[in-house]
Length: 115
Length: 114
Image (cartoon, rainbow over all chains, first blue to last red):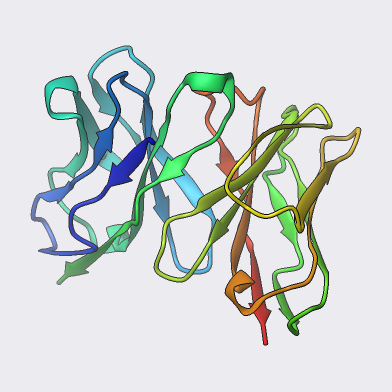
């Protein structure tokens, strides 16, 4: 069965430092891939998604992610962290089979940004 | 443009009771998906409705059921509540339910089962 692994349940960076949040999927066929952000007591907001166009995907708020088929990865990065980036980040896949909108989520990574 | 809305915001029930959660989809969207997010976990897919028909279901028992109405709003019903049903329930709408479609999430309903 398709699964998503987010390495590191908590990541802490200093303001201005590089943000790197890891996501690996398990599938022989590249799925559609999504990164969402969740602020406390709020729903999920889409940061970016990969749908088999360019492998480097740019999203909102300065985030980007690179799809690497050979590594089955879709890591999220941001060159310089802001305090406002502190939130929960969720990686999700849609396996493409069955043509439904079923998203399979990872466990999430909490990003802490230190001043 | 109105986003996805959910009601109520919070709900407290006791074990064995039944609950109905509501979701209004974003304008122009005909597909609604429901997810359960337990504390500290990622959301788990419950089911999806496309044009009033169930279009995919996750690994949840039959006491989790749903409806979609002609205006594409939706309800999630849970019967015989168990303590483990305590979670944030998220509703998401999308244009057509396709695998690459962006799902737009509501703020969720926090259900506590005592």
